[in-house]
Length: 508
View 1 (cartoon, rainbow, N blue to C red):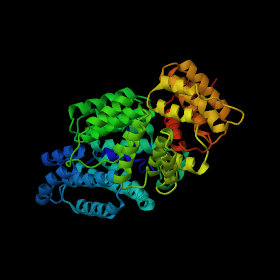
View 2: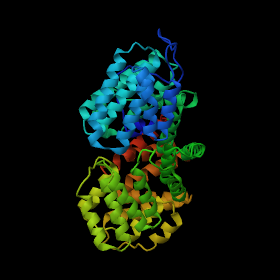
View 3: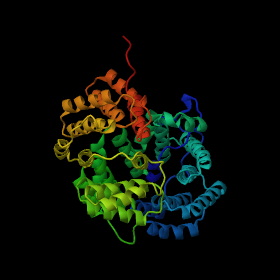
View 4: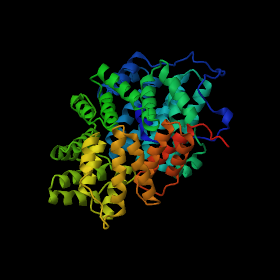
C-alpha cells in the first residue's frame, strides 16, 4: 500500500551490483506469469473502497470471497492492507497485537497455498513489509528490522522471477529509494540489514510501475509524485496529479488528504483549506485525526488563532498515537500566545513536556523549545507562520518590526536573515534570497540550529538550477557536515539525494 511507502525507510539485503533489478525489463526466468497475476473483480472493488478510506465497505466485500477461497492471495493482500491502514492511521496501540497476529496467519496460509504465480509471491512480501512497518512504528524495532530484511529479499526475488509483474517493481523501487536516501545517522541500520540501497534503481522501478497499467498503478503514481516533490523540487507535477485524482473522485478521502497535504507543503494555504472543507465525511469513512492537525496549522498561518486551537484540540481528543502530541501542544501554545491569552499559553507550554514521544522532527522541535525556555520573538514567530502559509509580502512587513540589539541571542540573529531569505525566495526575488541565505550561513558557523543547514540546502538547489554544479555540491556537502539540529535527518536526506543525482565532478 501507498501508506507503507509513506511510513519511512524499508529493508535491504547484501547483493552484488550485477544482481540489482533496474529499469529495463530483465529476461524472464524459468517461471512465468501464466498463473494468477491480477486481482479478482471483487478484490479490486474492495481495494478501490480501501483507497477511498472506506475500510468497512472493503472488509464487507472481501468477506464472501475469503469464505469461498480462504487462500486467495489477492483477497488476503487487500484484507491485510485494510487492517494495516486502520492501524497506521489510528496509531492505536491496543490494536497492534491483533493486527500483527492476523498478518502472521495470512503469511502462514500463503506459505501453504497451492496458488502459484506473481500475485501470491507479491502478497507474501507485501504483507511481510506491512508487518515490519507496524513493528517499527510500535517500538518493536528488532522484529521489524528482521521482517524488513525478509520483505526486501522476497520482493526482490519476485521481481527477478517475474520481471514484468509491475506491482513488485513498485514496492522494490520504493524500498531501494528510501534506503538509498537514508542519511548518515542511519548507517547502523543499513549495516544491520546489509544493503546500501539505490536512489537511481529505485526511481527506475517506481517509474516502470507508475507508467504502465497494473492493479496497483495509482499507488506507484502517488509514491513517485511524492518522491519527486519532496526530493527533486518537482512540486507542480505532484500537485496536478493529486488535484486531478481528487477531482475525478470527490468521494475519495485519501485523495482529499493528499491534496490538503501537498498544497500545505507548497504553501498554498487557501487551496489546502478549501480541500479540507470539501473533503468527504461521514460514518462510512475511516476517521483520520491528523487532518485536524493539518487544518490547525493552516488556520495558524492565517492568524485564526481560536479556530486553530479548536482543530488541534479535536486532533488530540481523537488521536490514539504518541507522535505529534508535542507538536500539537506547541501549536496550541503559539495560537494562545499570539492571541494574547497568557494563562492558556502557559498551560499548553507545560503540556509539551507532559506526554508524547520525540522520534519525529516536529516533536523534537517542540521539546527543545520547552527545555531551552528561551523566549520567542513575536515578529519572527509570526513571520515564520506567514512564510509557511505562503504569505511572503506580509512576512516581510512583519519582519520590519524586528530589530536585533546587542542583547539579542544567536538563535534570533540567525532566524532574521533566514526568514527574509525564505520570503524573498517565495516571491521569486532570488538575488535577495541568495544574499540573506549566505548571510545566514556565514553567521551560523557550527551553531546547533537548523537555519544554517537549511540555508545551505536552498543555496544548493539555487546553484543547481543555475547550472553551478560544483558550487551546488559544496553547499549540499555543507548540509551533511552540519552539526546535529532538530531537522537534520530530513535535511541530510534531501542533500544526499541531490548529490546522488548530480554528475561526477570534473577534475581540472
